[in-house]
Image 1: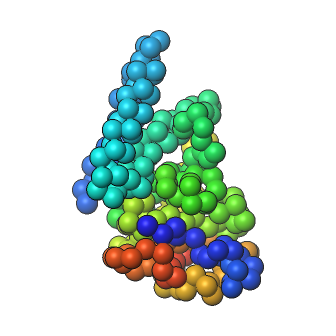
Image 2 (image 1 turned 60 degrees about the horizontal axis):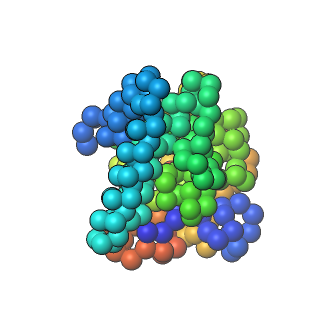
Amino acid sequence: MAAATAGRGGPFGDARRSTARRAPWWRRASARAAASESSPSGGGRVLAGVFLALVLGGVGAIATGGWLYAKAVAGQWLLERAWTKTRAGHPAPPWPWADTKPIGRLIVPSVDGDVLVLEGASGRTLAWGPGHLDASAPLGSGGHAVVSAHRDTHFRFLRDVAIGAEVLVELPDGARRHYRVRRAYVADARTLALPRTTGVPTLTLVTCYPFDALVPGGPGRYVVVAEAG
């Protein structure tokens, strides 16, 4: 699976360097976990169970070549748990050695898209969820924020997003920023250069293309541009 960043140097600067409506299982599991944590030992049991599931799932997934996919799914469960604590005013890493954290939620109601956005967009981070590019404006701000993710896991729903679709960004304080998709296009990562500043608050979503590619790592990128309002 190829990372969805625009190019080796990122999307800024020199381009050459550069369906069911039921909630996902990890969100339903998070609600059960929150209830378990009301008891003194409940949280420890839940977390231990999650890590055991990760290990067992990882063994099976490696055998079938789907370890990265397993991380993407199981990781969202742990990230949901961390997001719930962040929203409650008690930030905590999703796992003890994590070098990222959830900084917002991305919601596209028309295609049932609902994912947590992580801080940073390294290959390691994108294995767990969509990543916010550090060089872009803060998520939900008045500038140009860029988020990337893998085409076959967290940003799979982008292929079905239509022009005019509503995109919501939920921030840790509960505030929501509203955007509308203005355009979508295919670009070459080797020449893709996104503007640092825009006339209106903008959210750009980037993933690999084509969505059904059999061989990962190609230069194609699918770019969805949404503007505030």
